[in-house]
Length: 86
Figure: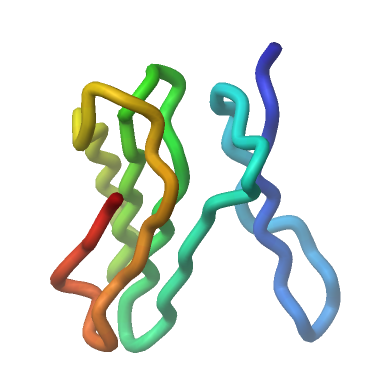
């Protein structure tokens, strides 16, 4: 069953991003806004992490096979350049 991550603007509740992905029973998602936007959530496959970086109107998406088993935790550093998974 596909699930979605929805990202809304807090000011006017406008939907900014809608990402379809695989099951995420723990609701794992991390977002950073500091000159650039970094959004991390689970990918569609087991152990996969989806990273979207948006800067100056350009968006880049990477799928990282982080683990052989399910991902239990994701965290971004303050500047968004480092990603930790467990």
